[in-house]
Image (tube, rainbow over all chains, first blue to last red; front, side, top):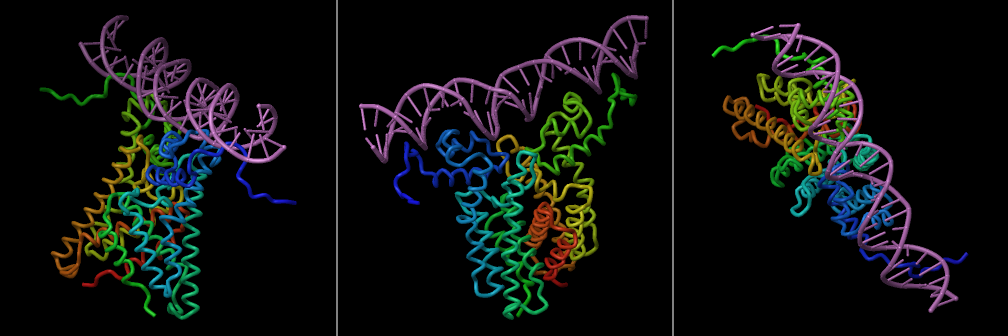
Length: 202
Length: 202
DNA sequence: GCTGTTCTGCACCGATCGGTATCTAAGTCT
DNA sequence: AGACTTAGATACCGATCGGTGCAGAACAGC
């Protein structure tokens, strides 16, 4: 079989799909899944409903793709934090990234992974479940990282990676809620610092 | 002028308004403001749209009244916590109440004051603002209580009531998000305990 | 050129949204 | 009894919801 890598047949689309997805992500971030209508979304994306459906499937698929983009964009601080050399640095960077992303000027306040669909009616259930899985995934990565830290002696043998991961994720979620309510970056960084003051020593 | 306290004139309503409001609160709690349609609400309340409008005004007013009921019902742990004799006990009771209310069997998981309308489109802005004010109020009460504790020597003179209040509220908000994602009561109580381990000593 | 394929713009779909008009039933008042 | 007031049921309102059908425009390969 022969795989050809040519220009796609047919009329090329007249918009940048990446740019459109970025705009959609911002609308979901600010208004949540149910609060963002197709009219809001396509207006921000600068395309028609038909083009959106052709390029992204439907509203649920668009949300999923916006969430992926969020993970690799504004929420990339999480992956970077996990690569820090010590558990203490992981936790510190994770919370600092959470503070800075939820209070970034020019972006919606808060976290898409929290306020995108925290509670919803039937129509938003898919988005809600996607975000629960997203947060669970983040927590699992923290847990594995802390388990590794225990194995490597970076955390004391009695440390509980499961609980520590949930603790950090809980504080990050709380920071997101506070940011959505208008808390400032410095106020939240103080909170993050306080939350780490009892971090288990080596 | 003479004020008469008689039975109201006209046909008496055929439903218990308190009971109906309780049911509406549960729907808002589970589905959020925008996710709860009038059909969902009135079906759960067991009354018609017309009766709901006559008794409660409109959807926004119904939400506000449901939030009041939530404050005096499921969220009454907050007021009780503020009356504890020491700041340490206030913080401990506040977080324990938050854990137990957000994970109560038979009630929706999470906190109405968080997931009721964390992010929304234009139509949910009123509810969103009401919840921001609700959380701000709770935080202000904690701050005043902690300020009193500083004045009374219950907290060290260097303690920052503003920051401590925001810290406790942030952890409580995070607990609510975690509960909405299915975290169990014992898991969250561990998190609450961890969050208090660095509480400023006397 | 022509044909095939895909994108765009617009009108439109049925369903549901929050909210109401109308009529009748069920009470209190004089 | 009869006037008055309010609750309840039904049907309905215009607007908006997520999602499509259709005709024409813009590209590829031939």
